[in-house]
Amino acid sequence: MILNVVKVFAPSAVAFFIGMFITPLLTHYLYKHQMWKKRAGKVAPDGRATPIFNRLHGEREVGTPRLGGIIIWVSTGLTTLIFTLIAVLHPTIVTEKLTFLSRNQTWLPLFTLIVASLIGLADDWMEIKGLAGGLSFRRRLILVTILGLLGALWFYFKLERSSIDIPFGGELAIGWLIIPLFVLVMVFLFSSSVIDGLDGLAGGVMAIIFGAYAGIAFFQNQIDLAAFSAVVTGSILAFLWFNIPPARFYMSETGILGLTATLTIVVFLTESVMTLPIIAFPLFATVLSNVIQLGSKKLRQGKKVFHIAPLHHHFEALGWPPTKVVMRYWVIGVIMAVVGMIITLIGR
Image 1: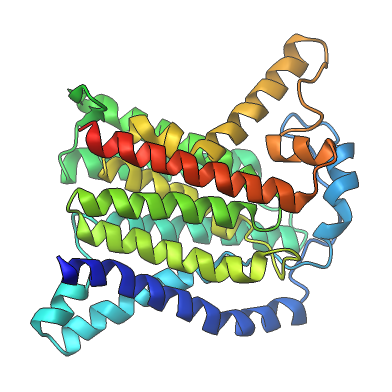
Image 2 (image 1 turned 180 degrees about the vertical axis):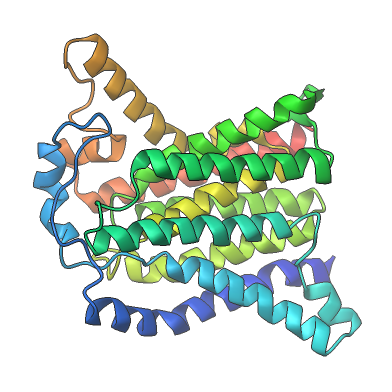
């Protein structure tokens, strides 16, 4: 039991310190090569202008580098590699126990993190260099859908997963339907990436969510997955250290896309898809506010429900300081994650 606890917390701490170590190097590169958007402002998903957002944040997008999410997936990858190499080069009972790279628990989430982050990196690079404004939403959606389909097929055929857990109701066998469900969850979480809009918001929320899943996996005796989730949490905290206002850099697509895609894998490995809306409540609130806003403008002749969507920018438009919005999101995120953990664990 004690060794399992060390296996979860030690790699997480290592990931944090690796992130802290590589950040000055990354920061120097990002500022030296001016890795930020060259034009301020953005447009809404429906193609319309966003004057409120541009008033609140437009000018801040110029002069602050993107690509901060590199810290997260590089730290996670290096930590995984270090513990694996130690076990290979110096095999003992302890070192072999501490390695957390395994076929049935961590291969797929690590692969997804790297691939999705590289897709995000390509998008960020194109946007920084002014190449067609980055990958279009449609292209990113197609790539995420393909990635989700590959993950779903792995679950169904390799891991032989074909059921979901209903809290207090047992397992529900859905057979091949787990494939489209998996893809839909990944696409939905991809849509929540717009939460990366305030300094410290996405980092804090995602650290809370992955920390919760580390706890769920631990109590489900999926220790390798718990260690991996804890490593991701440690990596995010290293990023967050430098993203707290005023942000030194933004997470951007190379961070948030990798995290949301990886979260899908972790959710299905822990069979907690039904409690995901609770554990990841800030993400769902973000997507829902966008859906409500777009639906209202389409069905009510342009009338809006919120001053601006997603929801965190609505609070800004009401006059809330960005730090207040972020801190309250963190508080709500912690409470909802704890509630979701309890329901997931006692409802099995």
